[in-house]
Length: 139
Image (tube, rainbow, N blue to C red; front, side):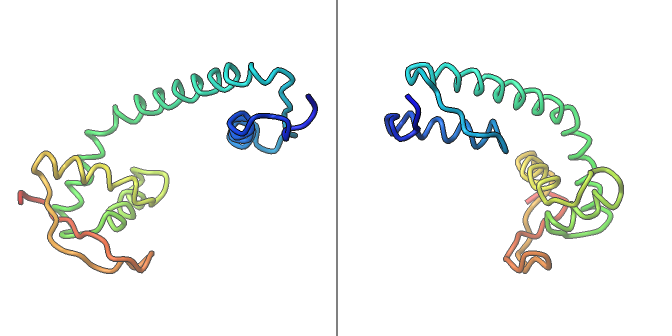
């Protein structure tokens, strides 16, 4: 076999996925044994699951600290959006950037714990979209 077009559609899709996500900037791989492609992808997926789990465990240890920081920001600065909180987290040196995802998951967790609440909506200065405004305190 010397062409990707000779593969079955699901084999071709799997090969394209594997090449795109695993071997960025590498020449395409042609699998000589089309029945072996799944074992190669399964090995890749095991690595992905392993690294994802390692990242999750590393972040998990900082969740309570981040939750405390987010709650303290809301208490000291007043009502804010996730993006505004993320900016302050970054400005304070607590996060490497001001991505809203540094604050948004913590807000969801704090809301579930009854420590913060939603109090309204506003247009985000950065995205121009309607976003939630959060406040410290119970619903």
